[in-house]
Image (cartoon, rainbow, N blue to C red; front, side):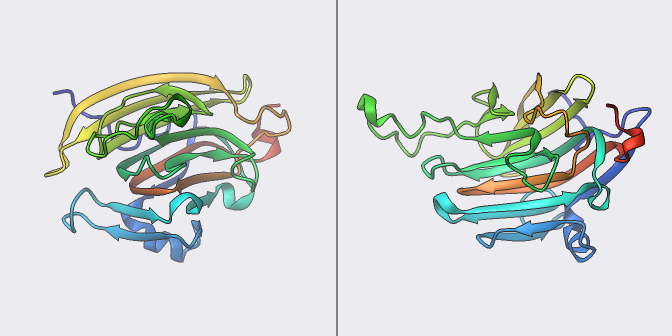
Length: 253
């Protein structure tokens, strides 16, 4: 069996680590106001190594239906932003209800406080759109005992389908090119055995696209954000952001 890559891919030569978070230490980070939590629908708790099932990290549980949403946001450069050249994360989708509309998980960076409309690079994981059946075509409701496989999107476009059944571990890295305003995603997904969370089947891939926000005015990233919608349980393991701190002198025009 192939060996899984490290949970977080370290900064490349010529860049500095701007931010790193092991999510088993989220409580301390919240006390230091390193993260903001927006949304009252979620249960958020930390699991240490050997404490319950699964690896150490922070668990987000959202069960509020179509209107439920929670965001976990870190403001880069103390709110001044940063010229992010790459960022990465490791997380596990524990469960997701595809029958709850818009259930999904997103991770990415944005260039101002409007985390949705100002997104630069964003990864979204959700169940296949056709899982619930197409009422216009007369398809019957799918059997609920059929395992749900997840799809992955980069800036709104499907980059990988049928990734495997949950729990599913993701190790993702984004490389941002500000000169060309492009983003490249490299990812590894691993289906985990429920009994011991040992990785089973593994899949790797990559994709490249333009920044979601194309305005030339955005010359740095303001925020790193994780968000959940619908009915979903996610275990956050770690994240890291690297590049150059966001002063006008160091940001390419």
